[in-house]
Length: 279
Image (cartoon, rainbow, N blue to C red; front, side, top):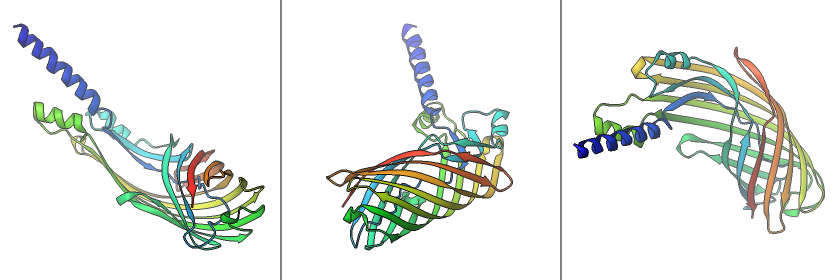
């Protein structure tokens, strides 16, 4: 009897733990998030093969939520949430950035996103010497970026729900999203280098974004498809510090307005920082 009771307690505890684990990643959301911070100075790298790589962390950018679904919620609340729209601020965005010089005043740029796509760009410096010279003076550049990102996500297929299904049978319903976002971004960046280590800059930009996505949850017959476009414009104030060993950090704060067609607009004050190394 005691062994039976012990097994009941053991498997009940296991069940509760698995339910907790499975609930950690069962919610999916249909979101459009234009990229506002650029982490780009007005200087190019300074010639063929020169460049830098960095990791950037951005917060406070604007995003539009078109709806969300939780695979573990079989109630009508899921149906309501699947069409609940709102404009929010992002909690954070982490990117890997790579710049490579082609000419003294010409750089190319990429943010790799794995199989999901990438952001690519080009920078032309019109005034002042490039970064490799580290010369004092005014700097001016123009930049263009293009992004094409395709993302999919499924809620309810983590290790917790897999184990629950294997122990108790059945097939846990899943919630799925499928999104496509394309954007073009143009900016003009002016700054001043005070010495080999310190540079400040002011970057103005405009971003055009198109977005389409699908949200589905078979258990409740939820299917939502959206398509929209947005425009963002704003200004970024940045400070770039280069160490004597060619490491650097870049801090940026901005003020930007994003408007979604027929869905309103929001003004955001994004802030972020990047760390990297020149070569």
